[in-house]
Image: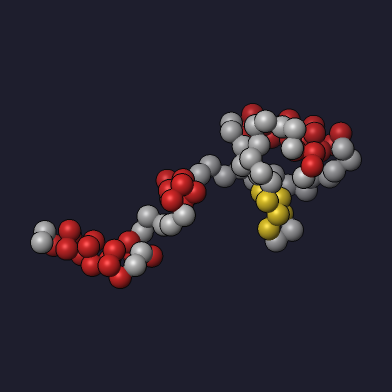
Length: 87
């Protein structure tokens, strides 16, 4: 993880279930650079997955909560129902 600290195009790496998750801008073009960095450090990459964020991912990142009303509080659900029925 220290290897990526100097790379200005990465977010803070996170480890989860034995995998390293890295948020980057322009991921498609950064994968080759990431592989070069790790090979130079003697790190073996077994696989790479590219996932583009959904609107839900972005919303959760910025607000800390989900967009879906069913995941909201009881008051939020009541407001949503009132709006749906035009009251």
